[in-house]
View (cartoon, helix red, strand yellow):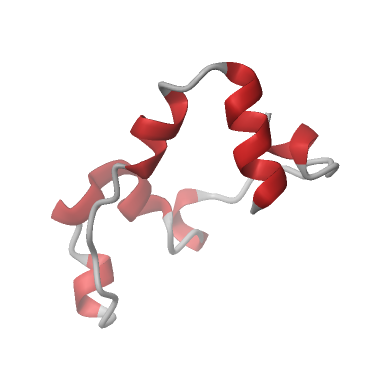
Amino acid sequence: MACFAVRTVPYFEYVESKANWSDEISREGARGKWALRNDFAVGECNVLVELLSLPCMAIVIVFEYL
C-alpha cells in the first residue's frame, strides 16, 4: 500500500547474510551485538503496529501525506 500511495515500484535484491550488515538486526532486533559494536543506537518503534490497525484507505492516505 505504501508503494501504491507514493507511486513507486520496489526493487529487491538478494544479499548473502555474511555481506549484509543489516541481517543480524533484522533477525535479532535490539538483542543483536553488531549494531552496538558499531555504535548504532538501537530502539523499537511501534508506529507500524498502530498504522496497520487502520483501514486500508487510511493507510494509503497516511503514506500519500508522507
